[in-house]
Length: 150
Length: 150
Image (cartoon, rainbow over all chains, first blue to last red):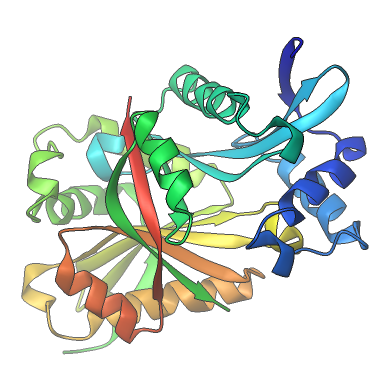
């Protein structure tokens, strides 16, 4: 499949990232690939925050995956720093290639480098395959995730 | 019960915050109230980050509650900003007083002020009473929360 590089996302990657966010049963209802301006503004905000890592996975010059890793310090658990993974997407052509695991392993390694004691994420209750995937990678489904749209 | 003030936490609040974090079936195993140094270091990190709000609820000069609100921008959902609530604690003397709801309502209002489109949190699967509490406040238990200790 060729070498894989995982690197910070730049503005030129945004169209492909948004296409991947939208190419998903849940994302299709939430995204607007025809208007990239809110996504470019969000990338500017992310790039100004040292606790944010929006990355893309690149193979053979093509962006084939993405995730967002946020580093969150806090007082709980003896002042532990934790990280949160959001927005994991793998291009349709790459599903089953192991790329999802490589992205999560990157996020776990990066979290360890930044002194995190815990990595966490939430997955929609309907994404049964994703739940099995995270459990295979050593995550425990110990929590219930609540959301309130504003 | 007297007037309630919700304000940013300062170093003098840390002993009470840590005592509340530890006065909890899960927290008791995780915290070290006898050594405050890691908590004070974490407070310094939080205070340097404009996306972090560690607050205390004060009634009659006593700290009686706490929570941490983190603002997270991202590309998903048309560049939506979301917030995450962590470390919600109410002093044993105040349980049942409505203070928990007031803290969450503060966090929701603050999230709205900062342009968030979504508030989210996770709660340990064993905290059944907390789940009912969040559902009463309008949250939906739509996700599974995964954790990986490092």
